[in-house]
Length: 147
Image 1 (cartoon, rainbow, N blue to C red):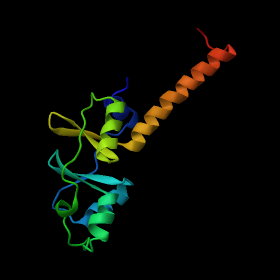
Image 2 (tube, one colour; image 1 turned 180 degrees about the vertical axis):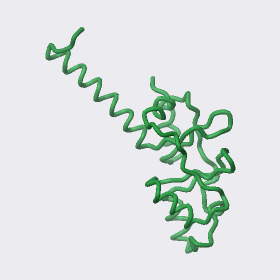
Image 3 (cartoon, one colour; image 1 turned 45 degrees about the horizontal axis):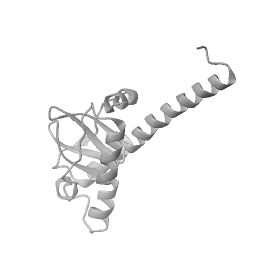
């Protein structure tokens, strides 16, 4: 069964897009737009203390009437971040996302962030595995399978 470490390896870059809790919401949005991501991890050093998602921006900033130029990330971020270890399975990560109703999970090892996976990363991994299986079965049925 595939692990989150496998998904991170498939992604290539392990760069985790993050901002400090004292950043303004506008600064965080600029980082998110620049990196083309739907969420940014909020870290003190390499330790996660929150996450700011597009949903947080809509509900806790826009609908609440806060000024993104003066509102601090720490005041509107999701503070209780669901995290997962690199040895967790893809199925376990999906279960956490479903239970917590989130689309991004920081990958933490020994208290430090080593990556971030999104639901898109997990779905991409799963679909690639299924495509390979379908191709192998098709080759087997059509007599092209070398074994």
